[in-house]
Figure 1 (tube, one colour):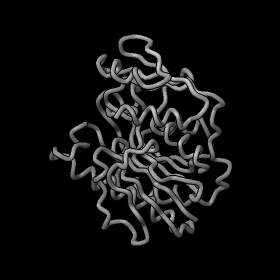
Figure 2 (cartoon, one colour; figure 1 turned 30 degrees about the horizontal axis):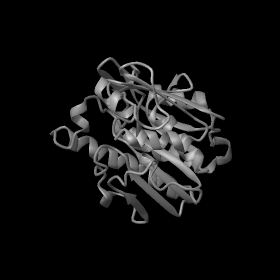
Figure 3 (cartoon, one colour; figure 1 turned 90 degrees about the vertical axis):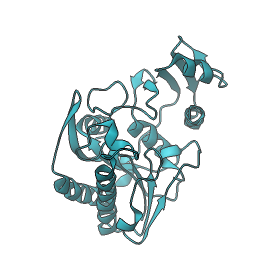
Figure 4 (cartoon, rainbow, N blue to C red; figure 1 turned 135 degrees about the horizontal axis):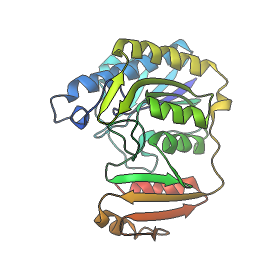
Length: 265
């Protein structure tokens, strides 16, 4: 069994402030270690479920956050950004049996996490077919496009509820619950045990039932914080300028959207 894990930091246990996500800030080290530990727990759960190949994408910021030496020896890690359209799921393809997300967070404009955003802190929100979407949705659909089912998610409680509303078969572990600029979290050691057990459970379930079905067509809307960015990105082929800060993009091929999203970085 071949497993793909994508890891972010804004949904790891206890994280509350942007300083805790920044390599240049003193608060960062603890939470990058927690990110590492949560990925390691997911890897251990996958191995107990019978995985013989595990790929980890370090998908936060510089993509150089995880201490690789603390992961099991048969794990391979992707560090840095190739700058391809799949971004946070770089390299995922039909050879993988399952997709797992660790440390994910609620979308931009959501009050469920003090660090809520979608792909870029320069966006207010990203909408798909009229609904605000998260990195969980964007990357789960990317995995589905590649033929891989999403089986497990850990992160804040708001995101976990959204995931289970979309597909109740996906196993989720909520480690934080956000309110304003605060979070209430479970103990980090309990989080590690829940993640390990949750990943093992997810990989032993019927994975075909967890694959998300892509819509037949897509209408995307991105709201930018800076009107200059919206102006610049409005020149991408097929993009329509709705207002000084809002662009829309329609397609029947999800990869077209991923390519447009990459253009924003």
